Image (cartoon, helix red, strand yellow):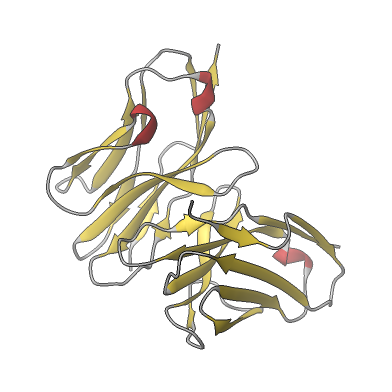
Length: 111
Length: 114
């Protein structure tokens, strides 16, 4: 069964902390994505990667960075967390059929 | 740039009634179209997709959608809903040739009442 696993379901962090969100997929997919989900706004693309060590900015990259050192793992980094980054974060992966497989999501609260 | 508009943020409906969730998109090029469903406290899963061919696409759980190029729409329908269909539904679009870049609509919350 296809699987995208996000390391945490819920996280609470303090303003100014550096935050790491981890995502692992077991499908040998080339493409991986990080989205942010907010009510009424749908999903907005933060960053994506189409290969190891490659990354591209999405629609809302400000305040975030990413790392992809291995094909199966894609990390989202909040360099200095702020309250406006409180949100649901979704990781996804895909191959070439445009079907994206999503993880369960990480609900991050920044206090 | 492409955009996706889901015209209804919430759709309440009684069990066994038909439902239509509306989706319109704007794009200057050919597109691929998708509907995803998100059950409470879960990630998204694919309901159906249109890549080419027949404009009527059938998906899982009895859902179907019709691609209308002239109206730039991809509305999702089900003839008879169940309580278990209560979820949030997202329409998404990807430009042909743009790789796997999906643009999502704002979502429609389907609330099925007994």
